Each structure stands twice: as C-alpha cells, then as structure tokens.
Length: 210
Image (cartoon, rainbow, N blue to C red; front, side, top):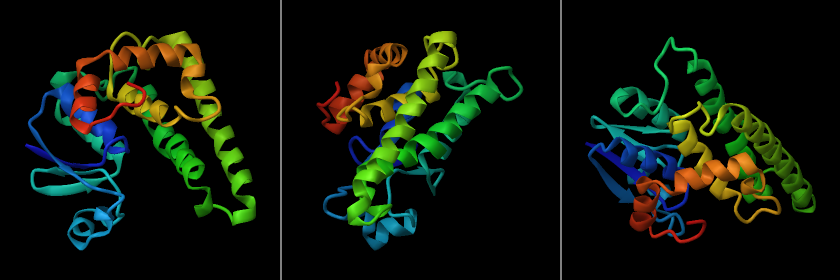
C-alpha cells in the first residue's frame, strides 16, 4: 500500500498515473494548495520542501516526482514501465527522465512564477527566457519521437511518457503548447486515450485538456 499526497494537475499527476498503470494498491490524500495545506507542520514533517507530491512507501515518506517515478518502475518490473538495468534503452530512459526533471520542469516554474526569478520590471523577460527553454525541449522531444517513437522508448508506454505528458499538459495555455509539435501531439493522444488517464481525471476532478 502506497500513500500519495497530491494536488490535482500538479507534479503529483505523473505519480498518480504510474500507480494506476501499475495497479498497485494506494491511498490518496489531497493537499489543498490554495488553502496552504502544504505549509502545515504535519505535512512539512513528511515533505520539508512544502510541495507535492509526497509518496509514503513502506511507512517512509519521499519527495521529488522523478525519484518516485524511478522507484515505482523499479519496484514493479512486472508493469514494464522502464527498461531494466543493463539493457540498451536504459541510458536513453535515464537521460530523458533527468532532462524533464532538471531542464523542463524548472523552466515551467520560471514560466508560472517569474516573480521568483526576477524583479517586477524584468518578469516578462524571465517568462520569455523560460518559454525559450521549454520550446527547445519540445523541439528535441519531437525529433526524438519522430525518429524513435511512437513512445519515448519505442513501441511501449513507460513512466517517461507519463512524465512527459503531464508536462505537456502544463503548456496547454502557453502561446505555443507542446501539441504544436506533431509527434508530441500524437504521443499526448495515445496517453490520454488510456484508462489510467481517464480514471485520474475522474478522481482528481480535472476537465482541461481531457
């Protein structure tokens, strides 16, 4: 049994999708970010970053979306959501997972919260810089999918696709969303057609980008 502390549409989304794809028993505990639940002492004892998600595994809490996805794929090899260590695709898998976590996800934070990165008079410059970083990743990802797709690692869905699709969704209201790139748009449609995506939307009460 896992316990996932989540907030609809946030970085917890990919972890929730992974749990649904795996079929692992789990309990969901919703964090109301607008109400400040993530800053309450009880939650900070679990996750000192004050962010979501938090995943409790065998009674111990862990944070960082990337770490949770890697861990779940490793703990449930029967779900085949990641290539096994030592296989040819392992390095490509780790490369994209790290790229999403270290380059793309932080750029989204700068896009959504430019005030955290620049003074008020430079916020638009900060957003423009973040947009360039985000779109550069989409360009690289689209080229990779066109050459090696339909999924990031070929013919089969993996946690990298779940992570990528969550981040695609975050771009939905940007001037040039991820789905402006054809191979990315095709991947998004494949993931969104899966029962796990539809079930997550039902549970989390999401409607946009369904």
